[in-house]
Length: 292
Image (cartoon, rainbow, N blue to C red):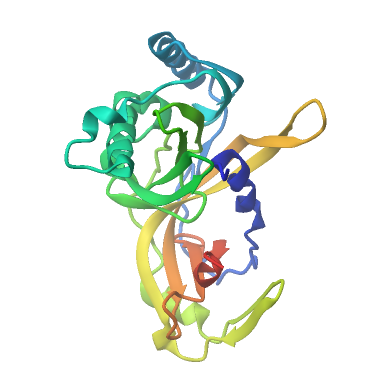
């Protein structure tokens, strides 16, 4: 069964080129990027809410890991007494999967203090069925102040549900939000586009590889300004030395441009996240390889 607390290991596979164009003449705001680190007051408030959550649902999971920095549920797994989502209440004129989605969205809205989001701010990423369970993965689409969350470090929430609505696994990387000291970028989209002209992308992922020189300005698509998090994780190991989850150490929160290189495929060959103040390249993704 594919579950988030394993798949988030893939987040570390993003390779940064470490490139940026010169934007030293621009004034970077104080306390930027915003940083999320351990905050005892925030965690105490979250922990009190989590204890009330446990009392409400009366669950027992043999693996229970909380994210003390992001203040969310890193992982609930190995259920001795699971949370049960009564999706059958929502079956009228719906199939089982749709009823489960309705039940999950209501569960998130009832427990926003755990997920720092609500059902109107998430989108369905995928549903995987295996061995009688449905692994349902959501991603947080909105961040704050009208900005979208950007990149694969955006928060995700996964529910692994059995046929009777029993929650076998719950995992979340949807952490508390930072307050950015600014609400607009300083680098223009035109400056950004020109900086990427004649950049070569070399990608080597096993049997799939390509090299592409950006020699036409029309293939550079500045999509939007978004909030991009650069997260630092450490591995959590069990008594056998096996990595079972990842613990958030900190998150640097940037206001960034999302830029795609589109050369005629169904998906862009490259998606970049570039800081809107410094021009620093924060992240790079390869969307056309995601489903391969």
